[in-house]
Length: 196
Image 1 (cartoon, helix red, strand yellow):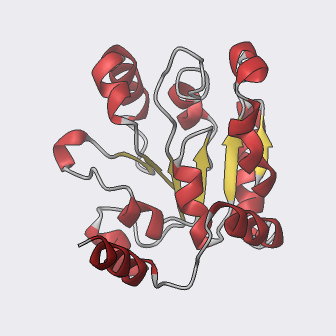
Image 2 (cartoon, one colour; image 1 turned 30 degrees about the vertical axis):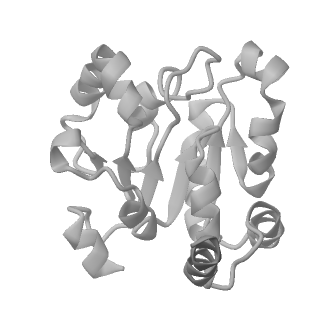
């Protein structure tokens, strides 16, 4: 884990927490505007926060990215993975992270395979509440934060007690993925051969 963190430019001496919000869609699903812009004010200094923004946030809300950069420029324990760093694949960052903070992003469905703690930011958007309930089913696999002032305590709790939701995560993992035997590539090859 230490080598992986160094390679990604992360502090190898600190536990890493990854914040990966979904893009700012018309449904108001993203936690970035409500939580992401101020997360640095509440994040515990003893851990590293790595922020991986959705590419569409850069494209459509670049003014908010500039605000975030201003807020975190003096924070030594916060790293924004920029487009210029050419880290488009989030998987290596997930591997090097102890906890994921997200919202309704699909990254939670990938991260659950690690069976590590997840924290979900609930911006309580009325459109999502009315029309997107299914997108929050995975929230039962971790803590849900409604106010940023709750975040320091929740982060520490998850770092210190990483197995609190493990059994629920295992059940959800089986629900999301039909196979977890590591043989998916072989099944794909077999299916392709049958078609040719």
